[in-house]
Image 1: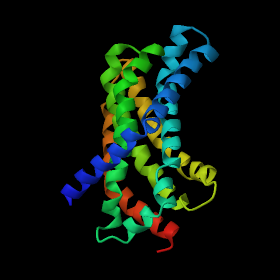
Image 2: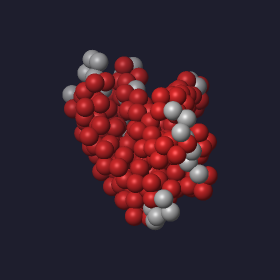
Image 3: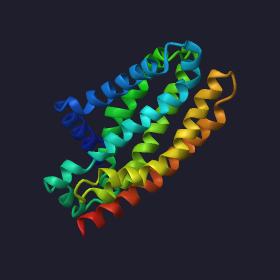
Length: 223
């Protein structure tokens, strides 16, 4: 089973590399929105620094919503999703490689470059480890939650709005905790509690989300 997951994750990553827009577009979107905030709010460094934790996390949330809208769409359109559901491997396991590849190509890369975006908003470089750690966990949680909504809406024409209505309320706790971790780090507090909550969210998401995703896909595929 582990060999299957590793092999399929590599396959999905290769497909993403062959379509560079799938990797570059989320990063460009993140960069453009980060640039627009100083233009709209003004160049006051103190105000930007105070708002930076919330800005970073709101933009990360929007990037994840965009990613989830396309998560299963192509596989559903070409019929490969139905074949996957009828394979011998449990569907809850079969979807894990695609989720992991999508996170590596988006949330993982976004977390690695996030200190640069943070500097643009006035975040001190000293909080870069907290920023990266919180985004690594937070983007994975949001992807797992969003994938449940994507599985339920994949067969619906123009289901993007419905998907947003389904997953945005689920993202609110992640947004609050992630922003709190950065706010504590910037203010000299202890972000350990917020990071621990994100870690618990990752653990719970990895255990429960694949089962919910598989159930949602079976409903959408009418299997």
